[in-house]
Image (cartoon, rainbow, N blue to C red; front, side, top):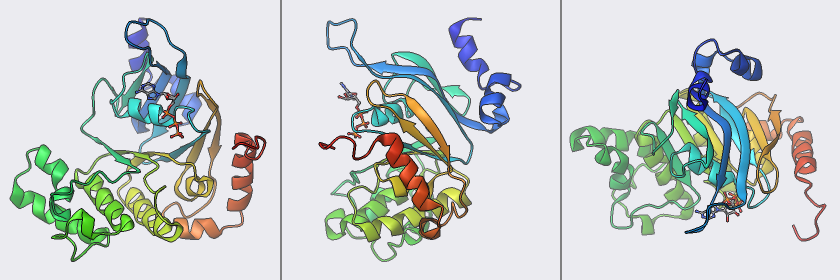
Length: 286
Ligand SMILES: Nc1ncnc2c1ncn2[C@@H]1O[C@H](COP(=O)(O)OP(=O)(O)OP(=O)(O)O)[C@@H](O)[C@H]1O
């Protein structure tokens, strides 16, 4: 079988390799990374060291998976390939059964920076994705209003980004991300710039939305407790060239309620296990 056919076979019904690996029916699989590697050769160069290599994993529909790993191990590179912003140098990525070759409509991306447009009101920022999709104003407005309220920004729709706090702006960015009703969310440290309390409240909003709407999410974080509080599963990456060295099932209740999950006695030992895997404290410079 040609390489491409083999890759497509991964998401075809009845593929025993996938069932064995994930215990899932192929129809339940949302994201597949199949032997994915990425390098960044400079102009005129043919080869370059791989930033990530040999990435093999799949994520089920409705599953929330966090990625942790040392700085520079390729977490953002992985996410950028998932969303179609980077093309893999080898292997292939599939979302919803389709090979990712360009940015995918059913996928939304949320970053540490809110990237709100300063000249647009919060309402018009939330509407942006729908506007790009050509949804008429009369249909955009109620969606934006509902999400502004859901993200606790009621009364701020006519404000501009500079009039909001960092936490409120990130709430607006979350509302904008959800407005296009994506099936898959790629989140690259979306809360890392926020203070601890604001972060926990936003995590709560996000977790409830993901759970209620059964969305699939791949989430990068450096905050080990955040990974435990929000995820069904945690993928631990090695240093460059980044690879998955461990998969940890978060076998704790309350995936829809990270505030409660943080308090569980099982959460602390999991943080310890992740610290050991990442060798936190072994290198005095980190
Ligand atoms: N567009 C690019 N061009 C060249 N090199 C890149 C590019 N994007 C990423 N890299 C390189 O790939 C490697 C992984 O970077 P990446 O940002 O994915 O790591 P990361 O794990 O997300 O890092 P951090 O945790 O510090 O945010 C780095 O060596 C980086 O320099």
